[in-house]
View: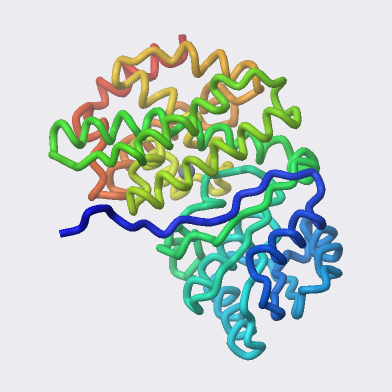
Length: 343
Ligand SMILES: [Zn+2]
């Protein structure tokens, strides 16, 4: 019999405006005897930051790769093994961070992630989205040892990406409703601490008093995404942050030639799934208007027909996830929800 459960959690989460100094402090404090650090950054948008950080005295080896594929993961793994790397730092967007997350998981070394945009809740999470050639899969990984978020860097990221982070966080509201439903109907266990963190993550921006995308707001967004990521570590799956709205987005990824950022799609789908449940979306819509988030699929050039096709396909993208779409499964229900959603 256990008297408590043990869950390995990330140790460091820093929000800063001076990345170089903060990262140096984190490394000195957390890894005082380590001298082989790998820095992985992309040759595009994040290169400028990668070039600056490679001057850190502790950085032993630097790689500039696009990231995101299993070949990239293997390339990073090879360097970790050949160069006897102790810690890896990833600087960039989701592709780089997920590549470093999976490569360090497979070689059992810690990673520190430095995002250049706040586009989703995968910064601190046990999941890496990787292209395996035949398909893009969400793969289980060890969560990073920590993350350092530089608000100056984030504020320079394309607005669309930081908007996507808001959508991914707000979608927790829908995901948690599905979790409650699965608990009621299927007896699925709700992990209260995971539930609480996911909910607070969404609330951190929904009730933020800061001007949208000001430094204070981005700090709230970073904290919310971190809380959401930790909720998934605690529950051991993506349940607290992924419900019917995520399934609709997965279906859109399959249907659309060029998909929109994940967080934008799930944020739009959240309005629909909440309406399907008969819930008010007044508060969420007010928030979306305030931050300039699209209010309907049509605003991002997704027709009603395409969206409805995604709703129909959604449950097939993940059959083990019970959601509102398993109950309200008739086109009639969807049409009705779509009508009120646009009101
Ligand atoms: Zn998500």
